[in-house]
Image (cartoon, rainbow, N blue to C red; front, side, top):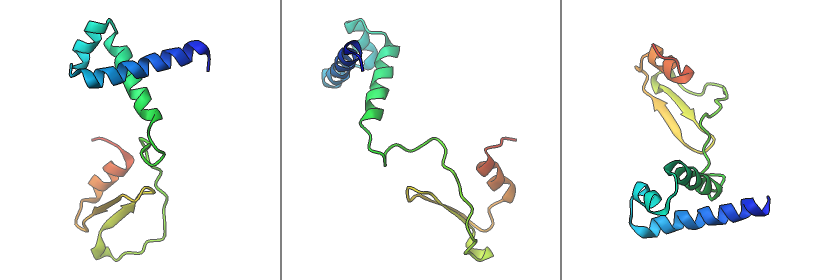
Length: 107
């Protein structure tokens, strides 16, 4: 990382921290400090992402891997995600709706 990038990052980190302590809305803080709103929000998001642990960085899409069915038809359908989340649909849940959710299609 270049010296300019390091300085910019430190300046933006200070700006985001200063906003938190100011009690001002982001819009007002940016106006008073002559910072474009878009710059402020970009750096706020970037710095938050950098500070997240791997467990907190949940991807936008989760790959679903098929497994051997271990349920009776009366159990419904359950999706277990790698991060421990579980999504269960009751046995009477409409198949068309489930397919739309899983494939992301819209009708």
